[in-house]
Length: 97
Image (cartoon, rainbow, N blue to C red):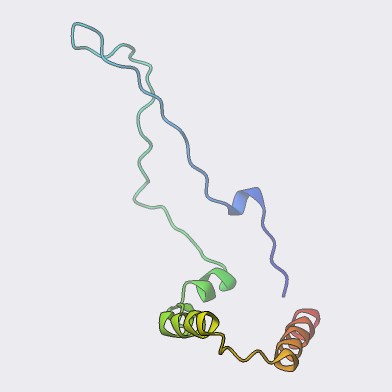
């Protein structure tokens, strides 16, 4: 799987500066840029990777995280280096395939 990130794929914001009103209560300049409003026809297409990342199945299991934190604090966390190594190797195989 290859992920390409280009400047066009990143969202981009535009800073809008405004000048304070003059003492008479009128705008200081008629050329002050207005806030950009999205067009009602604006459409966003997510890549398959982005759709996968936003799916509910990818939420963090907070109970599992808390259990791991507690086991670390208690000194009872069992770490299996063989399982970790196998996972790393499998990820590398998946990426290279």
